[in-house]
Image (cartoon, rainbow, N blue to C red; front, side):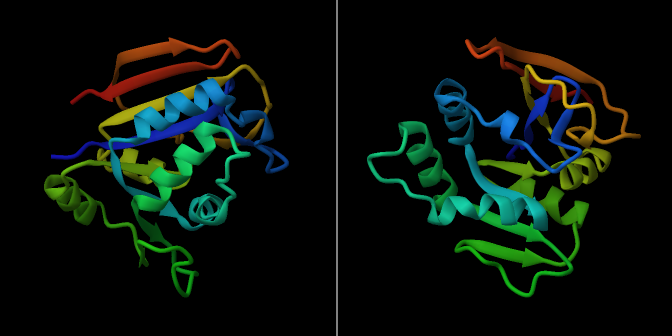
Length: 186
């Protein structure tokens, strides 16, 4: 059975995007990006909402020539090779290869998919991840906390969801970013 993993880069006060819609403060340096790439190697399928998919679709056409850092080239290869499922009621068609468009997030369908998948599944974007957390589908939460306070915006973790988490791993990077990996306790 595959794990469903939610990963997010968030400000220290818990936001993935600030009040102005910005997230430039969250851009990983080469050290963090290389670490993220190692984690993403186990992922075969990404589950996205429309907004996250539109953001991540840039990886499909991003310059991956020799002028780009190795971590950027590596992540682009990983992302392009993975399957994607986009949940949207407004998109007419998927804009990237290896992408399926679903109209509704169906927790039971995701549960069945996890049971038959050979490799990990990632849920991306705080809104969709909130639904998956609320449906008790998420097996691991991976947070990269950036040493910034942004004061508001879009929360990395949903309000109103109660789950007990067990710390599995932690790492501190030279940039001050802290990685925390939790298992959702049953």
